[in-house]
Figure 1 (tube, one colour):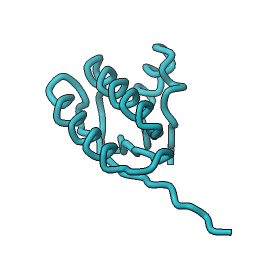
Figure 2: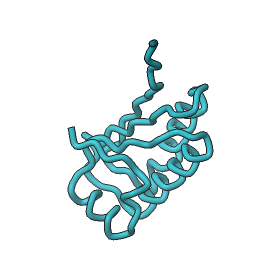
Figure 3: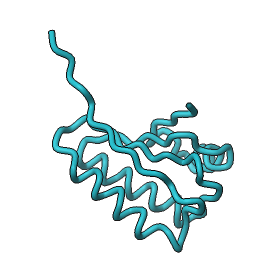
Length: 102
């Protein structure tokens, strides 16, 4: 039996994900997702270098997740900081994303 490989694309988050970076970040995420031809792929957003996420940044993550859902893709937040994890839990958005602490 042949195993199928899941298409995964990685997008590095900016240092500050917010009002000034949201448009370019969303554009890059949509480009990566639109390049995935098969459902079931993953967009991995690497937040290792991301220090702050404001309400605009949270909003863009939600828009990215909505686009992914429409395309039957998953969004993985890699290494979100404690502040973002708390914010996602507080707003009850934590179940929209796969969190990867590694």
